[in-house]
Image (cartoon, rainbow, N blue to C red; front, side, top):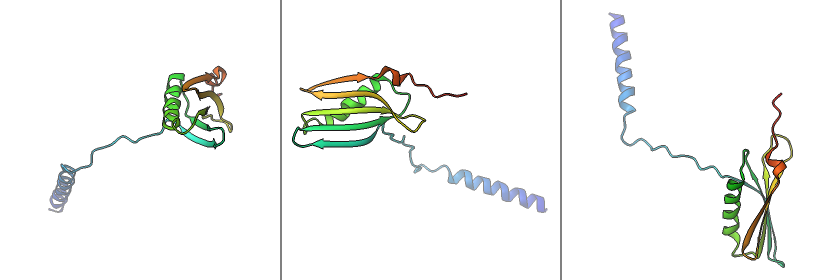
Length: 126
Protein backbone atom coordinates (compact mmCIF):
# COMPACT_ATOMS: atom_id res chain seq x y z
CA UNK A 1 0.00 0.00 0.00
CA UNK A 2 2.78 2.42 0.90
CA UNK A 3 4.63 1.63 -2.33
CA UNK A 4 1.50 2.40 -4.34
CA UNK A 5 1.11 5.78 -2.59
CA UNK A 6 4.78 6.58 -3.15
CA UNK A 7 4.55 5.77 -6.87
CA UNK A 8 1.39 7.89 -7.21
CA UNK A 9 3.06 10.81 -5.42
CA UNK A 10 6.12 10.61 -7.70
CA UNK A 11 3.95 10.41 -10.83
CA UNK A 12 1.82 13.37 -9.72
CA UNK A 13 4.99 15.36 -8.93
CA UNK A 14 6.48 14.56 -12.36
CA UNK A 15 3.23 15.51 -14.07
CA UNK A 16 3.14 18.84 -12.23
CA UNK A 17 6.74 19.64 -13.17
CA UNK A 18 6.04 18.72 -16.79
CA UNK A 19 2.86 20.86 -16.93
CA UNK A 20 4.51 23.85 -15.26
CA UNK A 21 7.31 23.80 -17.85
CA UNK A 22 4.92 24.01 -20.78
CA UNK A 23 4.07 27.68 -20.49
CA UNK A 24 3.43 29.72 -23.62
CA UNK A 25 4.79 32.76 -21.80
CA UNK A 26 8.31 31.41 -21.43
CA UNK A 27 11.00 33.94 -22.37
CA UNK A 28 12.57 33.58 -25.79
CA UNK A 29 16.32 32.93 -25.63
CA UNK A 30 18.31 35.87 -26.95
CA UNK A 31 21.91 35.65 -28.05
CA UNK A 32 24.27 37.75 -25.97
CA UNK A 33 26.12 40.60 -27.58
CA UNK A 34 29.87 40.41 -27.28
CA UNK A 35 31.94 43.34 -28.38
CA UNK A 36 34.56 42.41 -30.99
CA UNK A 37 37.05 44.75 -29.30
CA UNK A 38 37.91 46.49 -26.04
CA UNK A 39 38.97 50.14 -25.97
CA UNK A 40 42.17 50.42 -23.93
CA UNK A 41 42.61 54.20 -24.26
CA UNK A 42 41.25 57.17 -26.16
CA UNK A 43 43.15 60.48 -26.21
CA UNK A 44 42.20 63.69 -28.01
CA UNK A 45 44.45 66.58 -28.95
CA UNK A 46 42.03 69.52 -29.40
CA UNK A 47 44.63 71.79 -31.03
CA UNK A 48 45.47 69.41 -33.88
CA UNK A 49 42.07 67.71 -34.08
CA UNK A 50 43.78 64.34 -33.67
CA UNK A 51 42.32 61.35 -31.86
CA UNK A 52 44.41 58.35 -30.80
CA UNK A 53 42.64 55.12 -29.85
CA UNK A 54 44.16 51.87 -28.62
CA UNK A 55 41.97 48.78 -28.88
CA UNK A 56 42.43 45.10 -28.07
CA UNK A 57 40.88 42.31 -30.14
CA UNK A 58 40.66 38.65 -29.13
CA UNK A 59 42.67 36.01 -30.93
CA UNK A 60 42.38 34.57 -33.49
CA UNK A 61 42.00 37.78 -35.44
CA UNK A 62 42.13 38.24 -39.19
CA UNK A 63 42.77 41.33 -41.31
CA UNK A 64 39.22 41.67 -42.76
CA UNK A 65 37.68 41.40 -39.29
CA UNK A 66 40.03 43.97 -37.78
CA UNK A 67 39.51 46.33 -40.75
CA UNK A 68 35.75 46.12 -40.27
CA UNK A 69 35.95 46.84 -36.54
CA UNK A 70 38.39 49.73 -36.96
CA UNK A 71 36.47 51.32 -39.84
CA UNK A 72 33.22 51.28 -37.87
CA UNK A 73 35.03 52.81 -34.89
CA UNK A 74 36.58 55.51 -37.07
CA UNK A 75 33.32 56.27 -38.92
CA UNK A 76 31.55 56.83 -35.60
CA UNK A 77 34.13 59.47 -34.60
CA UNK A 78 35.38 61.07 -37.82
CA UNK A 79 32.92 63.98 -37.81
CA UNK A 80 34.65 65.43 -34.74
CA UNK A 81 38.30 64.77 -35.70
CA UNK A 82 40.48 65.47 -38.73
CA UNK A 83 42.92 62.67 -38.01
CA UNK A 84 42.29 59.40 -36.16
CA UNK A 85 44.93 56.83 -35.33
CA UNK A 86 43.83 53.40 -34.11
CA UNK A 87 46.41 50.98 -32.76
CA UNK A 88 45.07 47.44 -32.60
CA UNK A 89 46.58 44.95 -30.18
CA UNK A 90 46.03 41.20 -30.07
CA UNK A 91 44.98 39.75 -26.78
CA UNK A 92 47.75 37.38 -25.78
CA UNK A 93 48.19 34.69 -23.19
CA UNK A 94 51.27 36.47 -21.88
CA UNK A 95 51.44 39.69 -19.94
CA UNK A 96 51.97 41.97 -22.96
CA UNK A 97 49.66 42.51 -25.88
CA UNK A 98 51.00 42.31 -29.43
CA UNK A 99 50.66 45.31 -31.78
CA UNK A 100 48.75 43.87 -34.73
CA UNK A 101 47.77 46.90 -36.81
CA UNK A 102 47.90 50.66 -37.09
CA UNK A 103 45.02 52.33 -38.92
CA UNK A 104 45.00 56.01 -39.81
CA UNK A 105 42.22 58.28 -41.04
CA UNK A 106 43.77 61.17 -42.95
CA UNK A 107 42.17 63.27 -45.70
CA UNK A 108 39.01 61.14 -45.44
CA UNK A 109 40.96 57.98 -46.30
CA UNK A 110 41.62 55.06 -44.00
CA UNK A 111 44.89 53.18 -44.38
CA UNK A 112 45.75 50.00 -42.50
CA UNK A 113 49.23 48.65 -41.79
CA UNK A 114 49.40 45.14 -40.34
CA UNK A 115 52.24 43.53 -38.39
CA UNK A 116 52.52 40.12 -40.06
CA UNK A 117 54.69 38.75 -37.26
CA UNK A 118 52.03 39.43 -34.62
CA UNK A 119 49.43 37.38 -36.48
CA UNK A 120 51.75 34.38 -36.58
CA UNK A 121 52.40 34.24 -32.83
CA UNK A 122 51.54 30.84 -31.38
CA UNK A 123 50.99 29.87 -27.81
CA UNK A 124 53.43 27.10 -26.81
CA UNK A 125 51.58 23.98 -25.75
CA UNK A 126 54.48 21.81 -24.63
